[in-house]
Image (cartoon, rainbow, N blue to C red; front, top):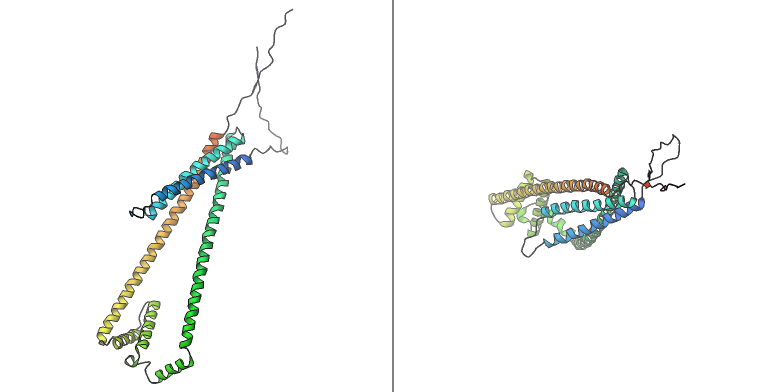
Length: 304
């Protein structure tokens, strides 16, 4: 009894000869990508459900935004890794290739397709959010325009020729300069104008401070020294409010930059671990090389 084993010899093609046939299976890659997307979506829905169970508005035991963000990033990394490992295994297994490099490349192709699909879905989500924000902004602008129209209509009555003539007569009588001769409405309007100018410029010129002191003294009937003290008190409060607002703005900008940095590092970690998982899954799914043996026909001795 003898057996004959089939051997495969490596053949080197001459230069300019026909190219080797393609060994990629796009059907296997697409199947792996679809399976990876389905598993990722399922796990992310599960993560959203688990996160929702931690919200307890009645007992005020809801985790903070930072904890939510870190948990969401960690869950996204884990879900993405598991999904791509399954997708890489599927693609390599269905490709039918027994070459380890081919299996790895099929896994990386699944990773790339999953990344592109995720980018498209994220872009559509951001576009929807931007469209909603634009609609809300247009609604606010419309309401603001309506309010401005009402204000213009109200001011149009005050800007009649009779009202302008009355104001000119008051100015010629000297009521526009002496705080004591001005009406309460006139003093209030000028005080508001001076305070608005102070808020816009961030400082009070000496002339504006003296004018405001005189207006406050005439309006409240207090001595000039007390009026000056009140003006300084208001100015100190405005300075403190401006400093607090600037500090809050810097803190908000710092928090935003930190959140963006954490999100970017989380996305990078998800992509890197996803690629590694896809490669390992593909290596696991690559078929083992099969040795083909052909048995020679059994020879039976002949008898004479």
